[in-house]
Each structure stands twice: as structure tokens, then as C-alpha cells.
Image (cartoon, rainbow, N blue to C red; front, side, top):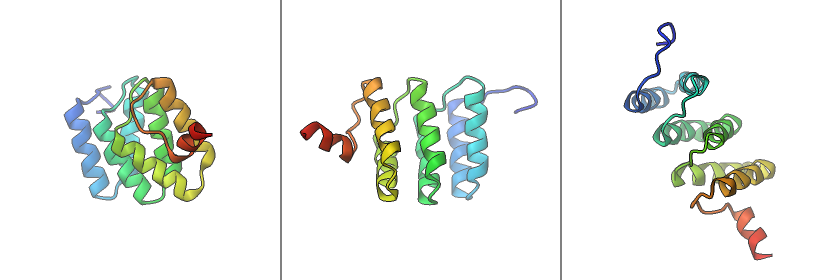
Length: 125
């Protein structure tokens, strides 16, 4: 794939991401994510759902946040599942600055995602 400068189709990416995550090969999932981003493409939100599930469940929040940020920087919205999972993990680990950045990016996209708890508190005050 790399030697031929090939960018796989959405179904292939999602299938590979699921295979990598189920087999605990998050390194390969991150490599695939980076390869696709490097080609100027943006993986489907299902691929992000799978990757974030694997990363967050193993406490790899910085990588999960980075992948989410890359997707939103390309104008794509996260699924509600990914958003809630990332917010929950960041909240649990006390990553308030990353929560603020995430909220700001969601606002810039005009997303319909629910705000994180911190953002909701700010709106009430």
C-alpha cells in the first residue's frame, strides 16, 4: 500500500482499523491513521470510533486527542460516541485544557454534539 502510494477506500480502512484494535495492535491503527492523514485524506468517523475506543480503553489519551483534533481540523465532526468517550476519559484524567480545546473546536465546526460538562457549566454562569 505504502510502496504503491495507494489510499484505501473507506470500507477497507474501517475493516483494517477494527482488525488492528481487536488484535491489540493500536500501533498499526495509528500508523494507518497517520498514513491516511499524510495523504491529505480524512478517515471516516467509524475508523475514529474504533481507534478512540482502543486508545481510551488503554489510557492513551494524548494519541486519542491528537487523532480527534486532526479530524476536526479537516472540518469533519466526531461521532457522539467518540465525543462522549473522549470527554469522559479526559475528564477522568483531569485534562481540563484539552477539554477546553475540544469544546472550542466543536464550537468552531458548529457541531450538534453535546458540550462537555465544563462547557455546560460555563454556559450556566
